Image (cartoon, rainbow, N blue to C red):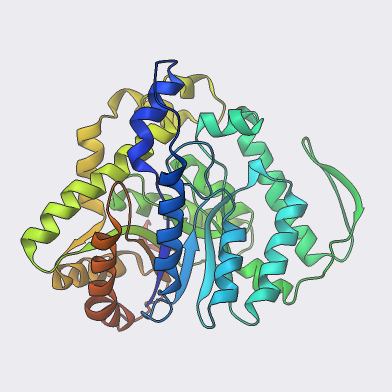
Length: 382
């Protein structure tokens, strides 16, 4: 079983100030040192990931808020590509409605060249944070349409020497992307889709993307999503595909340390997600394509979010973490785990101690987990 490291680079300590200022209240100006320190520390941590035995390095895309301070995941992993020799690189995700699709195709093509035989795993998503759409100048009501058209254009740019496209949002005539990809088939085969709304899962599957689970709900609920995903891929003529699964991870030396730090920092990550996506907001009800979030808005609260994340992510002593990851592997037959080990207000020294314990005592056992055959969801559902 493969296992990668994920960078989130959160500015969690700035949320109170940020939200107060957004509400128009008196608040101090931003402290740039928070950003500088967090970015510098986490880049240094990630530079050690290959030596620690991780198979890949992944990162995310977000804008404006303290949720995660990574605005261009392909740019960041291209830096790590040049600083490493063996790790693959991945995005979770590039938010397609925020980008010109031809530029996305160009960027991931250049990344494939820079990796020199290693694999870029490119996850796409459509976004769900109102303030990010607003500040970037895009209409959130158009996210589904823009996502589908952009994904089609990315695939055409990679696979076709010259293509034309006519859609509602993008129209292009006789376009040739240069340079041509080093290996178009391999690049296309490792395109992924992460979804929040269960109803969105088939959208990526129909485009030939593979499943990338970034859990926002109890893990068990994703079996129904994966069944729908598999059915949509099959109907579109694509073979079934294993998921890749992201999780928060914390490893403590003893049960007490593991419990105390997990219960402090993992809920903070859930609160940060709640703030960023405004999950209790009424705006989802009037936004096209976000009915799932609208239905949940009245039920979201901090305590429930924190408890859910503690239940569904990986934390404990090394032995407990191994057992949890084996259990998840047995349930989903994934291709790879991608773990974020610093989140919320977690200090660098706490995160790095956990990462060292994971790499020495947990990672070898994860690598020993056998890669299972695909789950046949369609047969299992009959």
